[in-house]
Image 1 (cartoon, rainbow, N blue to C red):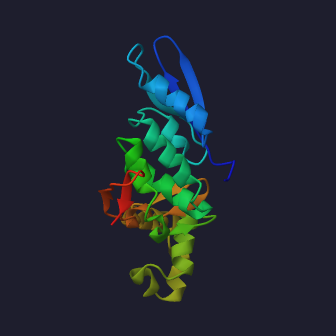
Image 2: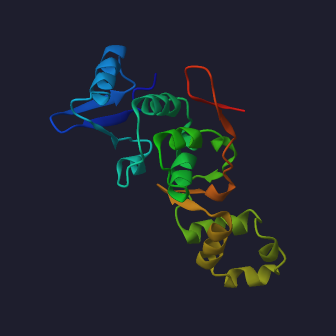
Image 3: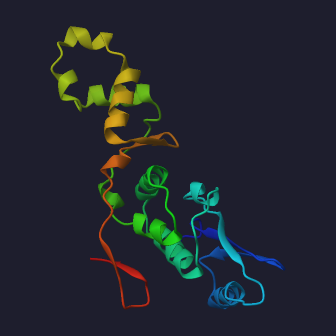
Length: 193
């Protein structure tokens, strides 16, 4: 278990507040479930903090239930740093309605290109030029390449990719394709088809 990857939940009720850091021991999960299911005081479950996905802790909060939050915390612990960066970009482009939608987003991230240390349009334009990623630019005579506006070239590439800059990295988020998920009869909720 990677202790650095946690999800802090808040159970916000009329008569009480409770925070739970996931992953958590079973007794604490049982207590949180009991509070969330209480008929005396309905509680709103909300993600208060998630270092890997800070956007999740900002309004508008996706609808949350305890089981989905547990699955999200477990899933975050399986992601590589590259996949977490890709998830943040995909999240920005496709803001989810529920935590279960976020769990679905954690699948299929391995196919999303992440370019480290490319944090603005100018750097992206230089990367496109250096790696011959634009056929039209590749056809230009070399003496004209110095005249290119690399910032404009980067903006064009970012728009074509539906790309996002995340903490100094570039992610071609538009290349993300959500895998098909189906309800499972097992105790895990959703599974890949």
